[in-house]
Length: 317
Ligand SMILES: Nc1nc2c(ncn2[C@@H]2O[C@H](COP(=O)(O)OP(=O)(O)OP(=O)(O)O)[C@@H](O)[C@H]2O)c(=O)[nH]1
Ligand SMILES: [Mg+2]
Image (cartoon, rainbow, N blue to C red; front, side, top):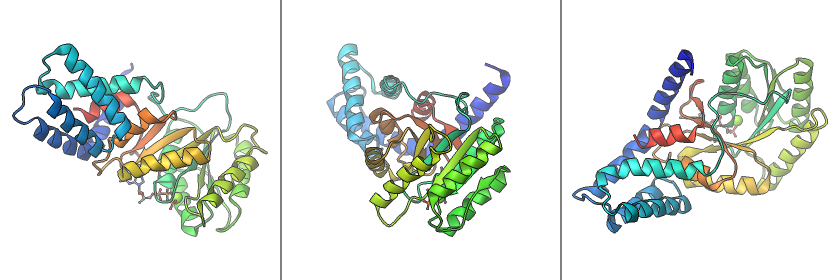
């Protein structure tokens, strides 16, 4: 690993640690209470631990898997001290998550064989789609890729303006039309323009709110179909953005969205300032779709490539 890479990783780790602070503090103060006056991990400690994990939005299914693993450790080790619980939790959760072989890249990278590589960003309103696109465009641009944005959320004028602000901030082109115009037509224009400009990456913003859910899904399908007239295998990535601060709601949204439309990656935002960061552990365990990015703030730098081991490490430190 190069010297610079090490510097960047340690910076990344610091901001992750900071982003997860609230989740961690809440979790550990509960854990400390649960083991107070106890020296050994017994059934009562395990019961409490189960409750705490569920309350941290890890989700019931994933929590049960974790508890089972700890129980196994307890029965193997016979005497497991509560002072070791933290370390053991970290090990077992990391081991659990490593069983799903997804989402462990460490850089903002796109596949070399797709040009332009087309990312369509979806999710319900307010979860952080546009912000995530801005941050992602910034990282791709910094990495030397030529990025073009497409303002296919034509439902609100403000949505187009917001994406324009991000494009200006990053210094990259945006393709847009009037508010109310056909999103599929915007996506079509964006891909055409990207081809002309020989762009590497296209990121398409979409509306989170339409008159109803069926309309929204139909529209996404149409956007996809029309894009394929320009780039046959587009979109290469359908990224669902989830608001991590809504905890189990984010989980539900992921379930509903993935059932209604094809989703190939996840981004979980707003992990800063929430105690519900455990939801990322549950989401990575329960979905076959990789969590690619996590949002840890509103700033342009506050997006990270999700690495489950770094995440668990930050969580249980
Ligand atoms: N604290 C924090 N705020 C975030 C993060 N990501 C997005 N936000 C904020 O969440 C709010 C909504 O973000 P948008 O990007 O507008 O969400 P959207 O999904 O595009 O919303 P619609 O266009 O209405 O569907 C904004 O105030 C963002 O600054 C994050 O990681 N952390
Ligand atoms: Mg938006």
